[in-house]
Image 1 (cartoon, rainbow over the protein chains, first blue to last red):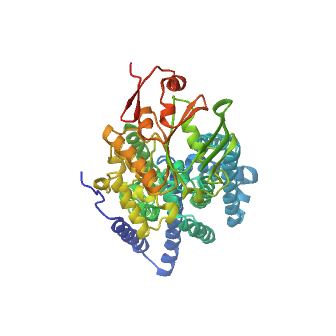
Image 2 (spheres, rainbow over the protein chains, first blue to last red):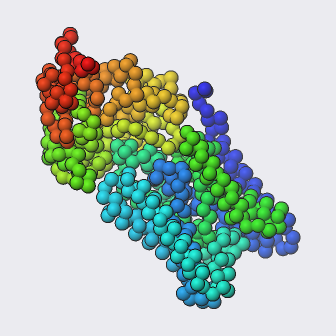
Image 3 (tube, rainbow over the protein chains, first blue to last red):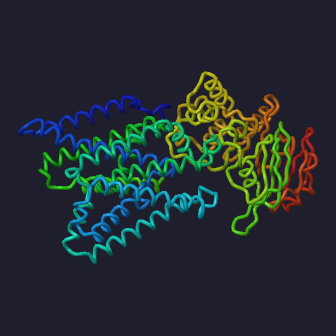
Length: 327
Length: 252
């Protein structure tokens, strides 16, 4: 076996991914354009911005989540985030009617959604780390995940219960909101979420070496002087914010993060988050833009991108699961 | 000096470590022995702040392990537990370089690189430096982890069953390395050992535990006796003296 199996150096991989991503974006902006350029560029630019933002948030949140859980199968959606999102949407329509929800200031609705999701995760983690966990964090992290799964089921059940007793017309409105769609993004929301994501990223970038240590596991991280509990809490808050942003923008995309995170580990072959995180982001943006491009130009909008991504991501999930248990 | 005062650890009413007080002077090799479930690993984890204690205090050179900032302790004390699983794709050299994190926070200096080279050389890992951890055998991985801990260059080095997975040759080399670390560099090496003869031949001091308590402690010539071994493990042993070293025979 050769001593170094890094066939391509991470720098080349990142460079190649960047080139591909830029190419996909350029094609998306220009291909099949008919009519006035200023309209086309603005219209498609919004979509691109949404895809970049969502790809970024999903990729970073998934990689960081897997770093602190030391597990490559779990993703934030396992913690019940997407189901909470569905429940909040359904509750809004159920409580106030689709007319009022539609007339609500989208920024306000967005703020409420992000806040409620961060508060939910914050409370859950606080309770688990200070109450039920009682110190032995290794066990409580697993407890946390189990509780997350149970919460996910609870939210899903409540959602389907509400959807069952709701007015059929309102149900259609809810259903429409629940599927990821890049053709229906608000420009103002984009700006707000871009600022939020930027703030999180600035903090995160200064922590990149700590992430490398956290990935070694709890004991090794403590041995190397990382305040493990505090670091994990901070990362969980970052993850909560990022997941909230992406979910609130375009709805739940469960397996997408898993797909790009594992692809990133595969192509980068390094432990350094300074390389893994950009690779995951580039892969996410590339997948979204190229996927949307193919969907619009080849299939003529006849399918939802989220369905395709979930299908491929689900297959990848099964593959990783089977390979992991075989090893 | 490691000062353990009245440490108790309970799990849902089951007492694992029962009011242990222990004072370990700086310098030398100290072995913790005892039957399975005697509380050795738990005690080591508590001393190294990996596990919170139910009651009691631990001080390392006067620093309370529960209140001292982690990065301060990380430059003074290192710990390696058993069963180290790592998710990241790391080469041996990457792993060893992590030992410098408490000193340089990930930005390696020339001094750090010197420590990394030395650690790799001491553990006979130079030919494997570029290999990924998941391509190594259990013994090679164990050596890589020990290299990381040595690279951390702390005053106190705590190791939970460091001879796990090692063949006779590497086990002897490892014990000699610990001896040298203590003698030449004045470090304090605390080991949990299952092989009492390794403990006998290489330790300055042996601490024997049973049912969560320290039952005997002292130099090897006091501890490696048929009476103490019977008391600690409940087995009959013959003790022979060979070239000034005491060897326990308990195979029959």
